[in-house]
Image (cartoon, rainbow, N blue to C red):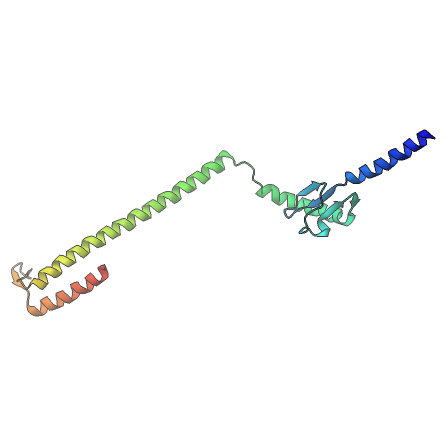
Length: 168
């Protein structure tokens, strides 16, 4: 009689222990199987839960096997597998070319800025000379010097003023 009670007590303990080993299996957003003794997050739909607390969801298992094949192929292609030396070299060369292009554009921009400043300084000096009222000579058609008339001076002042407006 003692052995029957021991057997019954053992069976009762094993039944409680079996529920403690309840496993949950589900597919996450990426299609990867997740195993846990905790229930899946509430964001996981019921059709992605493969096994729930000792019960197997056969409809989810059937659909997951086809999902696994398609997602495993895409996951393996996009997984963070180590890059080969050639891929790393190509990435390095790409970054190097982009950096050189950026430096070249910056150098061109700074050259244009310096050139514009130089032209603006020349225009300011010419504008001061025109505004001073002194006589300004120009080379003529035969190579001889001729003096600028007051009308020419006014037109030149107007043109240099427009150039100086662009400089500011």
